[in-house]
Amino acid sequence: MTTGPIVGRIMLVAFEGWNDAGEAASTAVRRVIEACELEPFDEIEPDEYLDFTFARPVLRRLEDGSRALSWPATIAYAPTRSSEREAIVADAGLSVSTGADGELFALLGAEPSRNWMDFAEQAVDIARQCEVDAIVFVGAMLADVPHTRPTPTSVTSESASLRHRLGVQQSEYEGPTGIMSVIAMAAEQVGIQTASVWASVPHYVHATHVPKATIALLDRLTELLDVTVPLGELPRLAGEWESGVDELAERDDDMRAYIGHLEQQRDTVESPEASGEALAQEFQRFLETQHPDDEPGDEGEGDDRPAPPPPV
Image (cartoon, rainbow, N blue to C red; front, side):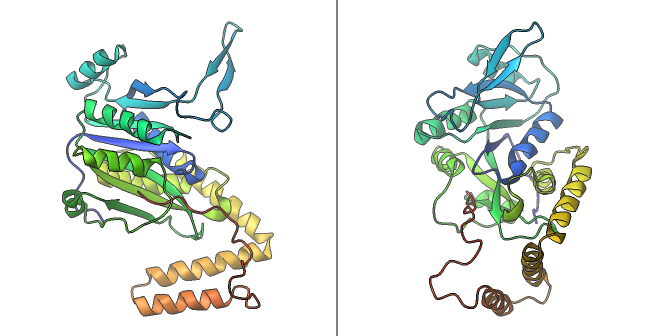
């Protein structure tokens, strides 16, 4: 639970791909960009960083009948009218229309495939150009959570002052990571505070857009940034998505039983009387119900699912 919004100039950062289960993070940041009327002012060119066999260009037919390619890129967004933004735009040699004042910026694109250190340096240079005080990374990870419960979210920070203001902890994660961790460490080295907000997406539905997770991220961003983001059709889409997964589970006994186990775990963890020992016992009981005939070291059914992207 946050104790107050982040103050100063803030840049939101999200990437499509490994850090974006169910497209929840990129969709949430796009919603903020639209609600705050941010407009592009700079970009990181893709040629040195993207593998176009994974992030392919898009071919479109124009109104005059000709064809054009739209190449994937990482776009930087700024408020639509401020003297600071006008200076940034002038430095970038660009010209865009103006609108309302603001102190929120954004960086959004596909996760790069190579040259991460150079990419992170460019991202931090853009943040410094905008003179941001903090970067908020937005991600979504695959997790063992049921779609029938509220989407879990977490906020962490490496900055002592931000942790105090937000009432959050440092991330304790160690292991393989994504581009956002690389950018975060580069930002911290030049004195930019960082925080991360993540949503947990049920791993058994990660192949589709998960609007329920997008709503959960927007709820947290509303608290962190003190902004209002209209949800529009998202609640309806979330309801339709959940109903669709319910229908799939009704036709699959194994899936329905697995979701029941996840619900029991989640309810135990969130119960007021839950203790560390009780949670450990419940988790042990859950493990004992899975593949009791397996020998130690055997992989049970479902162990080949993709590992979740870790928090920054």
